[in-house]
Length: 311
Length: 244
Ligand SMILES: Nc1ncnc2c1ncn2[C@@H]1O[C@H](COP(=O)(O)OP(=O)(O)OP(=O)(O)O)[C@@H](O)[C@H]1O
Ligand SMILES: [Mg+2]
Image (cartoon, rainbow over all chains, first blue to last red; front, side):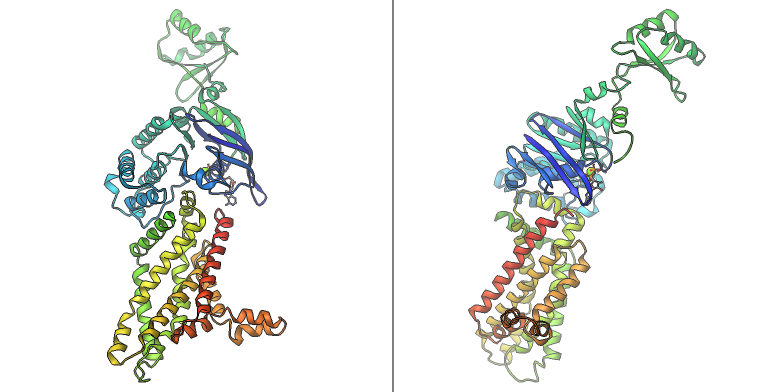
């Protein structure tokens, strides 16, 4: 369990983290969202034991990260922002070093090393200097290091930044596979990632929590939640169709996207316009090339909550 | 403690993965011999001892050791790898000790590679090998002292050039603490006890007796305390500055 109470970090006159309180239970995959400079990295650094907090406390599995730091850090796997490592080392030597400091020995050490090398597909670069690796491979070496000791708590700062789509998918599966038995905190700017791996999301800006909800809960805050988007085969029909749809009691308003020709119908509060729109299309014999129900758009919720501004 | 060993091994390996190791060792050997044979008049003196060799060690270390110590923490802070290192389950002092021991072991290796000069002097005459061993020990200890000072200073900055310059200045002042250049600053106003205390910090005074083959317990204690104090300060500096 991670438990933060009143976490504050002051940089001179700038308050990067402002009385942040939250706790995370085993089995939760928490996504940290927020504009650039919101304080995500700073918070993760405090919890991982890199930065001392100006005020407040953080405990990991019952150990205070400041006063019982070593015990806390034993239980944490941490991928710092930008995945720093030692450029002159090879991934193999680097992972062996981390295994040694983490006190892995004998058979277990070999088994864990083999496992993470396999999981992150590092076999082909094991003997290459880290400073000659591509950005994605460097990130994978950092991830391998973080999960090497099979920690109870994983803190990953932008884990999929710089990975190709295949690798992103694999890393998300990796995280999903580990999720049941662990606490995982990731920060990301890729909102689809929150949908894909997180079962909880915290949006922060200016060091404060603005929203703390499930991804579905956040999507439900979107005005697109339960909205219906259609595309008519014949563009000539669009104005008439909009009028007809807007006159439905379940529909609040419609919007036309001029670029794509899609019409989105927003629901009147608490109403579900999908079925009525379907029936309408049937009775008027519209030829629909698209008809789908929106679950809500995270990027729109993100912009609304954070006020569209960066910190 | 195992963590300290792991840090030490990693650090040593990284010396040899970069040109640092080779440049340092070659420069050390070239300069050590140049000083001995040209400035020290090794042959002309007609004595079978290594005094001309050891006399120049403090001046050799003055520039070479900060070149080695400057990167110890400054590089780690600059590249961000310190974030990785200190979030591993080790105490800061273990990381400090591990890195220091690696740098020291490396310097001792360079020192050990000067053995041909010892072979030469034994070939030419019959020196007092006990005294030579004592001088080697003293030289090694002094290198440790320089390194500890440099390591501590390296932790205060992300900039290796600054670390180098500050270390050279600090080591220079420590070397000459027993000499008028430094003492005159104090003697006008400070109580005699303070002046004596400053004088007793001098590397040179402590090294000179050992380099003549006299191992005085107090000199050993001096270097041991100096190293311990610097590494302690190093740990504190890191605890405060690690995130800046
Ligand atoms: N060492 C430091 N000294 C001074 N200010 C700092 C320092 N580190 C971070 N900050 C400031 O603290 C604030 C929060 O930074 P942080 O790195 O936590 O943001 P972030 O949410 O991770 O942003 P991003 O999405 O860009 O990674 C920023 O305004 C940043 O400029
Ligand atoms: Mg960040």
